[in-house]
Length: 77
Image (cartoon, rainbow, N blue to C red; front, side):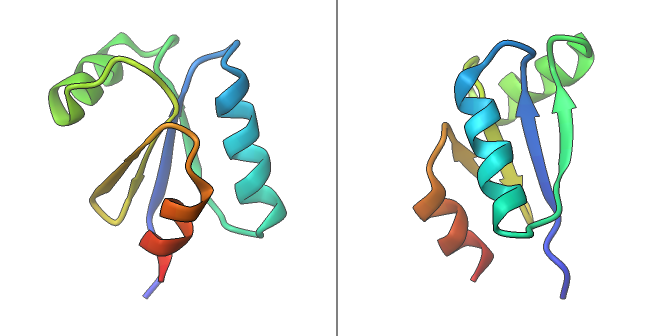
């Protein structure tokens, strides 16, 4: 089964950049949603997780808050 990964970011977030670089280096495909450019998605994100900060990563319906490569890899296995 292919993993469904969505990374929620903002334009000037250094941790978002680190997360995207990490996933790219691991050859892990992901979809990026910039919540700064999509206020509807920002509201959805806050409603889902209760968190305003980014990055937030949804992996197969599970949420990882912040830049946490170990939890991301664990969620993928």
